Amino acid sequence: MPPATKRKKGEGQWALGYREPLNKNEENKKNDDGLNVRRRIIDIYSKSGFDSIDPSDLRGRFRWMGLYTQRKPGIDGGKTGALEDEELEDRYFMMRVRIDGGQLSGPQLRTIADVSTRYARGTADITDRQNVQLHWVRIEDVPAIWEALEAVGLHTMEACGDVPRVIIGCPLAGIAADEVVDATPRLREIHDRYIGSPEFSNLPRKFKTAMSGCTSHCTVHEINDIAFVGVVDEAGETGYQVFVGGGLSTNPMFAQSLGVFVKPEQTAEVWHGVTSIFRDYGYRRLRSRARLKFLVKDWGAAKFREVLEKEYLGFALPDGPEPAAPLARRDHVGIHPQKDGAYYVGFAPRVGRVDGELLGVIGDLAERYGSGRVRTTNEQKMVILDVPEKDTEALADELAQHDLQVRPSTFRRQTMACTGIEYCKLAIVDTKQRAMDLIDELEERLPDFDQPLTINVNGCPNACARIQVADIGLKGQLVVDDDGEQVEGFQIHLGGRLGASFGKKVRGLKTTSAGLTDYVERVVRRFDEQRTGGETFAEWV
Ligand code: SF4
Image (cartoon, rainbow, N blue to C red; front, side):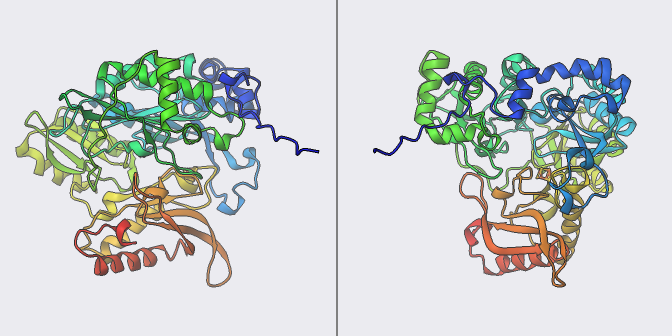
């Protein structure tokens, strides 16, 4: 008898006729659009309290409005995954305020500062996607918070969930003296047309967009689902190259270039086409395979481009050049000239941790020294714009008085940390405080080290702090210490480099949280002693 042919299981792709939900998440999304939860929060839940919230909203659709329940304090990492959601979660929420392009006006920054102080116990973290994350938010206060945010043009819609998340943009768009193109108008066009639209409120999973025309490639286009990167074609015309299918987490992949040239006025249309491909052809059977990167890997860039052009755009895009190589440090920390003759001043809060009061101070300084305009970066840093050259040092001094350094050590400048066990239900270890201590200790022990070196700290195997593309990536897990006790610690990944290589997991190389500083100090000292010429950490490893 011939062997039975193995029938390839459907991946739940809508375009191939698989419309029936294949898992609980898909079922929830089919039952009710995530965007509809906004009305219920305003009309019912905020009035009747936490206990009135339908579980499928609480642990599902709330994300569409940028809300997650936060972890109950005091539950150790060993219980993560072992407890039911209700046992692990607090009656308070994490709220993500969406800041597309990282662009904040003076009134917007003041509003976030005020909301943080009034409704979020003063908490405010700059995330690595340019958002501000608040904690301790009560359901009763959510409508008032939205009202305050929306009055200044901010919102939390689609800040989480299976939707187009915040659009990353260069913090210096329209400002940097050396930029290729200002992506701001295109970013706003996509935001205004499609964010909150039912057309894209049920994607297979999250969908991350980056748009940039800056030469340092600060938007990390290599690890976004779709990225537009400014280029100039042979005729001297400015436009964008498009990358698709980047993402980290447990199966990290770098985005692939489509090899096209997109005129600025075509950007929204191309974004619409790519997002539609994800919605229609994206895999929906398994959450672990539901990111665009899996489809791009299976199809390849050539087929993806063909489907985009033939089925969605209805025209062929011309071939386009690849962007220039990125700079070693992609952030915008320090004092640098703008194209209009003023200066921008980028500074480094430690791992993005600020608070409502401090944001108010930053707002005051931005108004006193500049025009009030402030930017967040996707390296958890901030930038004040429009400062006259003569005032830059005075501003740097005032920022330093609040521990916001304009010329920070490598460790302060290039260390990032995810939310971690303080608030995240998936976390196994503490990250923010551990990373802040690490910075302080390394600054003391290695005061002269000045080479580029990224240290990214994650509280679990997910990749919120991008550990796979860090020079030193630290993945939180429980480890056994010298006394045989299970304690907080990290699996170490070394030598990750955006667009080039993922950090290598060194077999058996783990450290306890308590031993972390000693470990990093040893590695950094060795690198500093052994490196030759301009050798980077990733090359040295
Ligand atoms: Fe939470 Fe893990 Fe993401 Fe950190 S990496 S924020 S612990 S899910």
